[in-house]
Structures are given as structure tokens and as C-alpha cells.
Image (tube, rainbow, N blue to C red; front, top):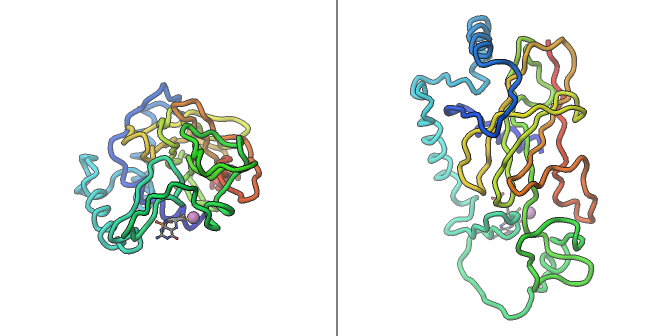
Length: 261
Ligand SMILES: Nc1nc2c(c(=O)[nH]1)N[C@H]1C(S)=C(S)[C@@H](COP(=O)(O)O)O[C@H]1N2
Ligand SMILES: [Mo]
């Protein structure tokens, strides 16, 4: 999970123009925020580079141009790993259906009975929501794992990092199975209390929705950060994992510990 989170960091910087949506109750006022950022950039030139404050000259307009160029490059380099020559895209459903290296399609009148479909990739019937259940593969007390559950991850700061007490930025991504993300809350105390984060503009119902929260001045100490997303369909991340034999769909808020120095 932590390695994946490192990979996610490129998604949250550099940040294009942010737009507040859904009545987000951002901590700290806009004027204060800008002033704090400027002050921080002056005192710690290296710190700004590691946050979402755009630093590269080409992205000074916040148009994300550099960002896109880098993405195109990555897509080319990883085409084989991503499923060259073709990959099945199944928006809203989990990765098991996103078949890579697709070179033939077989249409079958009966359910697929291989180990993966029949035994491995299954969850208890009725435990998770599904708008379009995969009825032909349902059997007995289990159903195949299909639609994703609403989820979010903090990508920045990283677990174990030291952050500034003047205020620092928490950023991450949220997603669901197609209704879109309506709200993301962030906790600084391991989930005891929650603050609304700012949402970036939606890029499509199945896309990651970026969120951020700029903290106010904080007393020194350890903080347990967590994020919790709610979809436009009203589905919210649960407080704890809903246990199932495969350990699937764990969308309980992950806690990241940081130290304010
Ligand atoms: N050809 C092929 N495609 C596949 C699989 C596979 O075993 N073979 N595994 C699936 C599963 S279970 C997952 S989690 C994803 C992983 O995709 P990634 O390599 O892009 O992370 O690929 C899916 N597509
Ligand atoms: Mo998988």
C-alpha cells in the first residue's frame, strides 16, 4: 500500500487551479492561506517544491501542461505492462475484469467456472452494494466481486513525515464506481473529528477526484491523518473493514501518522 501511495504522489502535483465545491469548510481563510504560503516559500525554499504549489515555470499559469506531458510519456513507456496490444476497460468494476494483452474474445452461454471466477474473486452475497449485479456468475452464498466501493487515499504527506506547524497541505484522491465523489472529509485525529476538504473539479464519474486541505497553525506533536469520501450516490467509507474471506473492498479510512515539528 505504501509503495502504491508513493506512485499516487504524481497525481497530486503540480496542482492545476483549485476550485472549491460543495460548500467545503476549508480550515483557514483564503487571504491567510496565501500569506502563509508565501512566508513558507521564503523561509523554506525546498518545502514548496514538495507540495502542490506550482513551482515549475511552464506551469505558472496552473494549466497543468507539464503534468500532461509527463503523463503521455509514462503511458508510452508502460504500454506493455498496461496490457499491450489492447486492454479491456470496465469502468466502475474492479481490476480483475480489466483484461490485459487482449487478443481474443469468447462469448459463452454458461458461467465461467475457472478458479478465479468460481472460487477466488468472490464476496459474500449482499455484503457490498452493486447497481448491476453479475447474476449469471452468482451462486449459493457468494457473488463475484464486481463494482468498486467508494474509497480515498491521502497521497501527501507520506506516512512518518515531518510537517510544518505553520500549516501544511494534505492531498489525495477519491473515487467510486461511477456516481462521482460528492464530499471528502479529512481527520487530523485518527477519525474522531472530520473537516471538509476542498475538491478539485470532477474529471469524469469514474476518474480520481483530487482533494486537499490546508491546515492552520498546529501545536507540535503527532497527528493521525485520515480521509473519508462520500459518493454522489450517498455511499460513504465505513469506519472499519467489512471482513470477508478474500479481504476485498477494504475501504476503511487509512491512518497516516505525521509529526508537526
Ligand atoms: N492478461 C491478464 N490481464 C489481467 C490479469 C491477468 O492475470 N492477465 N490480472 C487482472 C488483475 S487480477 C489485476 S489486479 C489487474 C492488474 O493490472 P495492472 O498490472 O495494470 O496493475 O490486471 C488484470 N488483468
Ligand atoms: Mo488482482
